[in-house]
Image (cartoon, rainbow, N blue to C red):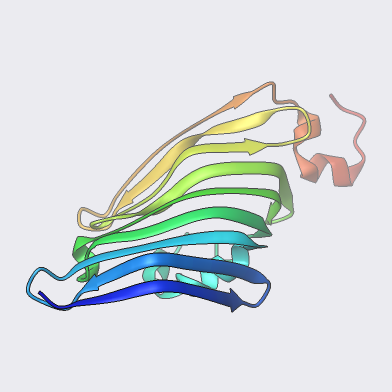
Length: 168
């Protein structure tokens, strides 16, 4: 079998620094891929640009999401996209979408042979949090999601905070 072995790569996309060590691409019949990346520090919007082609068909994907991020991204499986697996463990702070800010974020984000997912999502707000998951099966055009709040109050909604409404 013929392999392309990648010993180490350091890269930068805008404000995001990442590296890959001990990557492997099978150039033979097996067409296996193993590309483990570490995101040392950066911005979620830079990762969205890197993976933008993969999610462009999903009209509701949050392409305007902004915030600091670090973690790991593993690309593995087959080189054919429909057979590829991309899984990540990401953490961040001050993520902002449509004027709502999550002070801390933790999630497993990825793609698994046709299914896009965000699992084990924890979004920490001012005093409460939002926990859950969302999956989109692109082969069946099926969306599955489940979210719940813990310790959540009106103060956790930045919209109300901006209005300076004296509500709790």
